[in-house]
Image: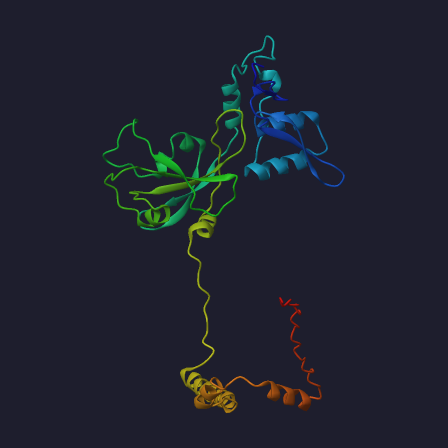
Length: 314
């Protein structure tokens, strides 16, 4: 349509520019097969429930593993205004449909980094997410009022999966709060006040969406904590090391003496380097001593000059 390609959701009927989500199935060999196009993963679960497929449990597990949390069913398609007839409490727009799917999301676990270096977990409700976690971040005195909100960014300084983003919430600027040395060292920027770390999915969706999932303190330590060095016990005491060192030095001197016994003095080597080249007679005697006959010397044949007859005049 108008030189553009669109895909239609198999649950809502909405047009989409990408295929987004899919209905998973598996063949006899256990290979994953992808079918259809869906606006979001909630629509996939809702369609699987309505089909009453035997693979419903497997489909739920597959989707939950992809997203990182328990995904619930989307509203039934009969509640959509472009399908329903003479019903109340209809979903009028695509945005209303996505908002209804997001209402099913529960609380998430996040990690709070205090200015004193303490790190602990906090439970955040959906209301906390809507307010950008202001309840867990000490508000600066000079950033009061509803017009000021915490800022956030996705950090790349992590060792995690590619389908997850780690989002950092904090109060910007030099705002009068205590300097957070730990967070500043990790994220390579000056941060004042507390910091909240939440994990965010990068799932496909027909509209922009922010879904936060659990992020634990153990995961934080794996990604940003310093690896502990293994305790190493010395293999030698100082006295044992001195004895071993003297023994190795003695053995090294013996090896050097053995190698030097086969060497020639520098004077003799210098004489050998200026000896005249051997003559043919000497080479012939050397061949005879080795049981070989020297090649016979070829006699050089001088070419004859052509005779010219000279006629002598009378």
